[in-house]
Length: 82
Image 1 (tube, rainbow, N blue to C red):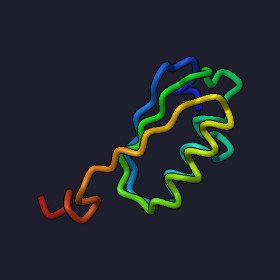
Image 2 (image 1 turned 30 degrees about the vertical axis):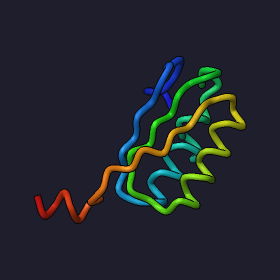
Image 3 (image 1 turned 180 degrees about the vertical axis):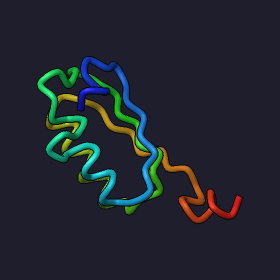
Image 4 (image 1 turned 60 degrees about the horizontal axis):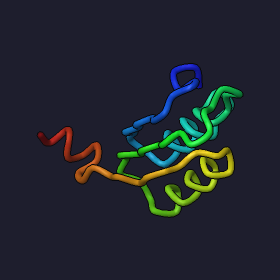
């Protein structure tokens, strides 16, 4: 949360559904800070389940932010394979 305080945008690229949920909505997640900026654009480039992206979108927009799902194809397996 501290890294995203007063940020106009945040970009995440994480390896799993649970990592994304925790990064945004966990106890110390991005949106947990009282300094989460209204209108902050959150761009998630994780390759995760669409339902998780929808959940995160709801969390972010409920706090006044905006959310874009922008997955990178290949995920962890693609990165490891080169």
